Length: 130
Image 1: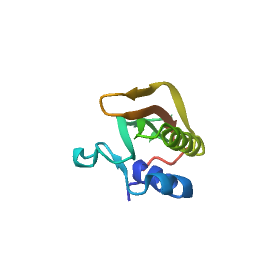
Image 2: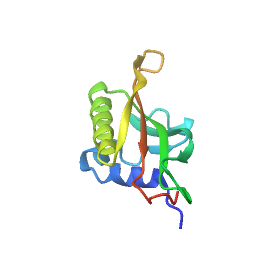
Image 3: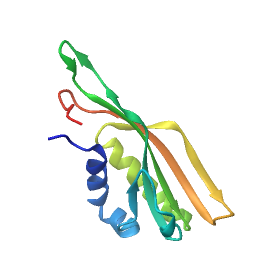
């Protein structure tokens, strides 16, 4: 059976009680419905490119590389930063590093803070069924 990296990530994030208290069920992958845009805080996980081979061996790919962005958006700057820090710590816990690109911005037209961070990671050797 093929594994889904986004299910793995969302399960790990939801295992954090503080993350769960702040975000609840407002974490989506690929797109966040416009009908829910007025929620106080939400997280969007967006793939930046399809998974690619990580390390190659004589008979194929031995690992998988992922590259995605995690947006934390909300009306309370402190909550946005706290959730972004939980995401960073969770991602680094399973070998996904934060890249230097991203966004840390306040948008007055929507009254929302946005912290968007990009992560790249490679699975462990022989963990390639994605």
